[in-house]
Image (cartoon, rainbow, N blue to C red; front, side, top):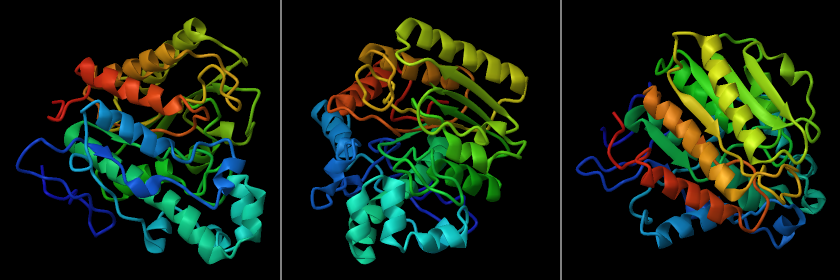
Length: 343
């Protein structure tokens, strides 16, 4: 493995990875992912320190440390413009616009330089982390960004606390550089992934499986017109047995549609807002059900030898971080993720 993710044509994003041994896990994280915003972050149900809590649980379990994960650098405006419109990126210079996207109205009253530094820079860093994770997956067969999953954002519109289209950006970057010809998005967040659906609406090279609660935000019927989309809408309070059956059936169906042409990479949006008690997801999946779900997806990727990168996306309860960490530890215990490449 190269000391840098150096398959890019130009210096888009680089991950510093030690080549001499396997001490570095293909897990991307920065302590700067976490958002502290004069207490305003508490006005949104999103746990703005979830990412750091997941890292801490994994570190306490002796799986990782700050020296054995990949630390991203913040993505630049020029790099963002490779998968966002100039008009949209410029609109983020208005605090009122950011307040609408993040659903935290008081943000509109703050100077934009504060909003950029204390909020948007954190989301840009996580976006960088997703692109680096996609690169790592091609090198190591799997990777996890302990952040990201901003699936409501498209190239020209944000929403639902999603200001940058990290999933679309990662796949478009790899495609532009000739590293992949096809991709599959598996979106199991409780909400419809309308952002990436709009970005890939008329493309042939991206297929999407989206399993979500059809009665909650965003209800974007236009996005469902995506050419290669398999959307499975759930009823509120769907529980483990039916949920896992729907996910399993959906995976079988999407691969049947693709036929013998397996995707070059899987982008797995592993939202945990489907967990029972989540105030926004309104589903009833147990913590063990989420662990089984993640194992199902990673086992499929492992058996079919498809590189996979995972992002965390939604999840709005204090116990969410522990469940995510437990799921990652289970993947390790099952041998589905290792420090060595899963070849």
